[in-house]
Image (cartoon, rainbow, N blue to C red; front, side, top):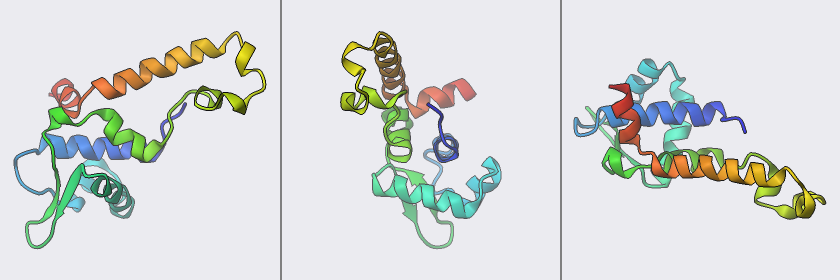
Amino acid sequence: MKISSRGRYILRAMIELGLNYGKGPISLKYIAINQNISEKYLLQLMSVMRRIGLVRLVKGTGGGYMIIKEPNKISLAQILYPIEGNMALIDCINDPDFCIHSDNCLSRPVWVELSQLIRNYLESTTLEDIINKYK
């Protein structure tokens, strides 16, 4: 499993919004400059976050993006899964029919368990947890 630039960038942008939680809207340009991400690319990613209800856009002077929930209510899974999709380590984890050896594969349980550990981490770790490590 390799996290795409989309996943890495949206996590950085969401951390930036989390750091500024409660301070009002943050402009896309501010996030783009602070995180060294193309504004155009960031706009695409933020539209996904808007669509799933994690951020809202405030239009007008002084507008920008804000996270809708408190950082301790947003898990990394909520941020990454809509961007990255299925994050299983190998294809047969979610689709045993993908491989004819799934039923008797000696290594498949390792990948299933490791994928579950990653899933558990992403689901149990919040934006606030990451922000607290940063501070």
